[in-house]
Image 1: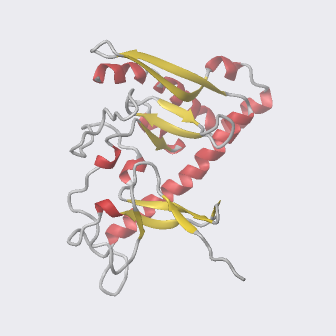
Image 2: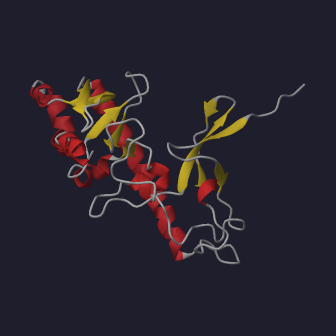
Image 3: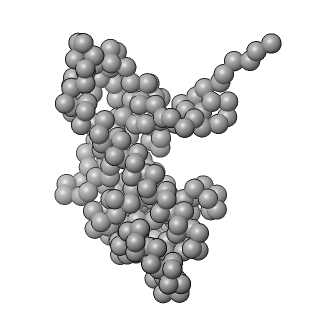
Length: 246
């Protein structure tokens, strides 16, 4: 007796139902006026290490982990409440002159993880958020199935984001192995006198860097992580900016 294979597609944060990108059915699937409304209710968004310098001027950059032990990632905080994005409203427009994270710019496409019999498959699938699909949008593929310059540009962004995500995971593993990621929380008072506690975040403290050994310090510099660490530390001042936006 044989058993069937159970497969599911794991949607990234903010995405709803995913469809595998198809050259025929999704030939004109990209809306002409693309909205970022999918992120309007997200108070944290994934960030890659290559974006730290651009993002640190506008957002707090933090680290997060589902269990506080392994698989740390980086994120920008976009709101102090759980469903609040102070940079993108329900109209899908991002605040002017503010850096838009690559995660947002990839929308409505993504490289999705396929879960097969409870395990993640190593190869990811190019998908599109079904909610964003239109039938009369911008051309992604020609009638013969060739990629248009628009899709090649989007595909490049997806691959660069995927590569940067892997590199960021490597940085997080290094910081974790050196004991540099420490949990912290932020308290804020809204104009309506509501007390907000933002938890589940991790940061690097400058005093811990000073306590590193020579070999560890050298590794952070050689890998390019030290400059990213300081961009992260500087960015934490932006929590006050978030409070001012409320």
